[in-house]
Amino acid sequence: MKKRPSALFFFLLFLYASPSFSQRITLKPLFGYYLPKLNAVNDDIAKELPFWREFLETDLPDPGKIGGHAVYGGQLQVHFRESYFINVHVSFYRDAAETQFSDALNPSAGQFHYSRKVEFYDAILSLQYFFDYDSDNLFNTYLRIGAGVLSTNAKTETKSTFTASMVSNTFLPQVDTQGDFSGSTLTGIISAGMELRFTPSLTIWGEAGLQSANVGQLNGSLQRANSTAVPDYTTNTTFDFSGLFVRLGGGVGLPF
Image (cartoon, rainbow, N blue to C red; front, side, top):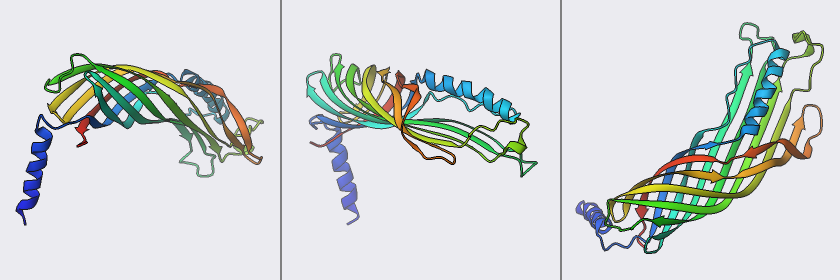
């Protein structure tokens, strides 16, 4: 009984290492880094912070920028013919800019929290061309071009517990707001990469490239304190996710 798992393991290992194993379909998990533009988003954040620093009369920490961050996803690759492959790609990106103020020495003092969060999912169908592809080669290089859809969601939150008596300013703006916005757009990519093949069905790969995805203004709802929500609100800010990416991953040939 104890020998069966070992026998099965060695059989599968032999099968996957065999040159005759047909790996027309390959599953490719990935991890990477994406650097989107989002210039308008970060410009708006930079413009808002000086007002809050002056109003709170404190050196409110910089929330940072929404930009380069890790991406996760996967690809399904199909060997179409000769040096051509069809690739279905999905990935997920999320980043945030946040800051807050509170006086630890004075519990009755007001608190302030500022948050901007952005995420997207994309699904891309692409064509990969390998230069002189051979499954027996240790290294294979390729170009990839594709198009698909990118869907994004952005959440904004500004909250406070201070009152007019807590600050010297006589004007107290309506601070507490929450927004939830979304949008989508067509996206395109072009990249170059390299694949390192350990066996006919086990690989690691890496690529770098450019993605185009300008969503523009987002639509959603905005909730202000002590007022009804605005259900059909369009952001003044545009969201341009075009940028550069680097990806690394593995590949496992499927037995069909």
